[in-house]
Image: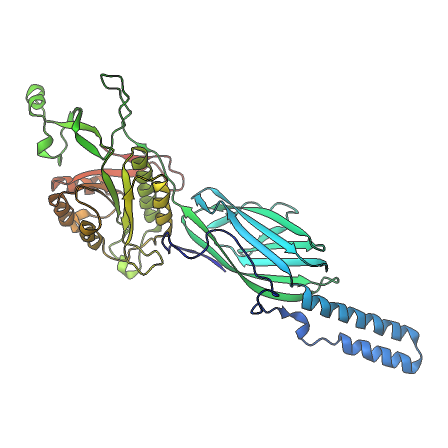
Length: 447
């Protein structure tokens, strides 16, 4: 069986690659369901024909009876040995892909005995989120009723490997476990069936998109400055910009304001030595505890979080992730500590692939725990699509405790929610995709 789950942390015991199936002779617990165990009258018919032909002296009946007995004997041999010493191997290459990319399922069938197999078939459920490309004619595999079916004809000690392209249409962790094997005899009849446990796992990360922000400029020394960032270093003055309601009063440039006659605030270059934690509010509905959620909006939030992680990694910041969602572990909160290690954004993507599209605990509970989970001075980037009224008191408490807080408001009401946060003194911006989450090309962050 195969299914999608969001469930399990980076330390999952489930294998992420392919494993070799155990053969019946290697594991006695694998018991074939042999078709010949059903009532088979052919041996009885053969004996009757031989006896009657002998008594009546009709040679053709004796010969026909012997043929029937030989066929019944061969069928019994195939039934007992067809699936013995047949090894099935299955793995994904690669075992981690981005939503919308193609994963290659590599399947190998190996007949390790001298007896040929006229036909052998492997069948297993295929999740609807993994779409097989158009079935090529004569490729030996096809999709029937959301089941992936592979068929082979194997000679003595023959080994056949094929590659099946599956398009990952939604993030998640897809675990494949049990498959059904069946084999036939020389006459094409099915003589043996068997279920084998063959674990394999595919991790589909959310898409990562470039953040649309002001272009880079060069300073007086000719050095190309980094693009505008959510992480600013107050010691690196970079100019001024018009005042926006909610900007800290301490950032007002008093002399420039007096000279221009309009309030302006200071701008700073990005800081590359600050820890960042993306606090993702996966709750998309006020009735989430009744089992209601917006799956598409949850996918949008995951894309924004993954894109932020990649941006912070490119800027040299130590980035982490915190989210109150189910991941398959006993913990109600999923947390990845900030790190500037290589491929940290990939680890963030792995965690985002595992989380459920509905919360495991209130987002306010997560913000309250962050004080004990990260060190003071860490920048907390809140990504949420809800009205911030419920968590703004906790966000302001984080600011008073020495943490930096930035609220990125997503969804249709993002601009209004960002304005509400700025009115309370919390830095906030609205953020959105430039299209549907499946086809968007950029993440737009408002000034």
